[in-house]
Image 1 (cartoon, helix red, strand yellow):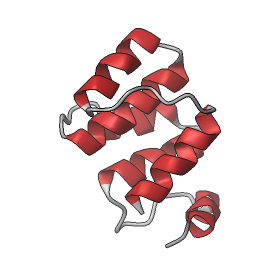
Image 2 (image 1 turned 60 degrees about the vertical axis):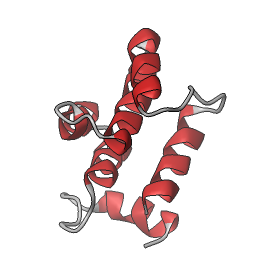
Image 3 (image 1 turned 90 degrees about the vertical axis):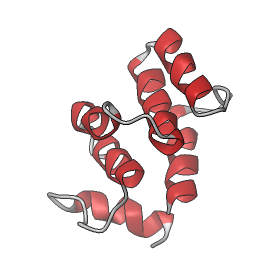
Amino acid sequence: MTLAEFRDSLKLDQPKPNLSVPLKALWYDGKGEWNNAHNEVDHLSDISSSRIHAYLHRKEGDIWNADYWYRKAKETRPNVSLEEEWEMLVTRFL
């Protein structure tokens, strides 16, 4: 799947069943469903889920919490727009 195909899948009512947890969270976020996106990763502590969790809290505007999750993911908050970060994450997890 490409970034363009992933973006196109946002027209669907449900995410494709074979998506990983990070991609499913990003799919929901791409649909504007922040709560569903957060629910996908909120109970997980692996590095990939922590990275998505960080992005979601950054998007929410909760920078302190976002930075906590970036540290858990062993990364720092990127100096890019939220849209660029979303695209980078989708590309990474595809």
